[in-house]
Length: 77
Image 1 (tube, rainbow, N blue to C red):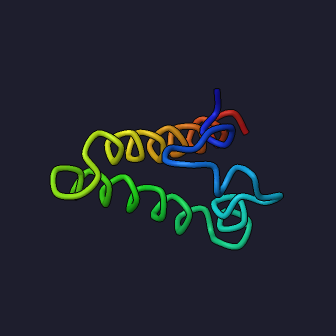
Image 2 (cartoon, rainbow, N blue to C red):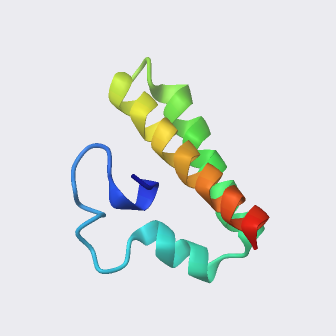
Image 3 (cartoon, rainbow, N blue to C red):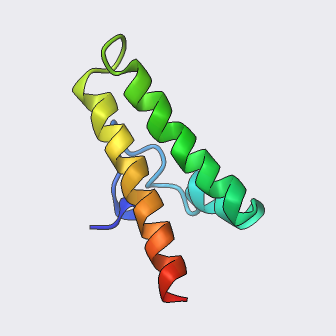
């Protein structure tokens, strides 16, 4: 299952016609979008012990999966 097809911690993004990260990807340069994904991985890793626990680790993994998918897409193109 792709990162776009699931969400950690609810369904408030996947039920939207356009997911926020898809809008960001269309509006941002590739470098800016990759930075957004990397930043979220770092954010969730940095706070997991103090705030969200395992759910934050899952969110970090989710953003990392999306980053991997983006990089693999670029390698195919």
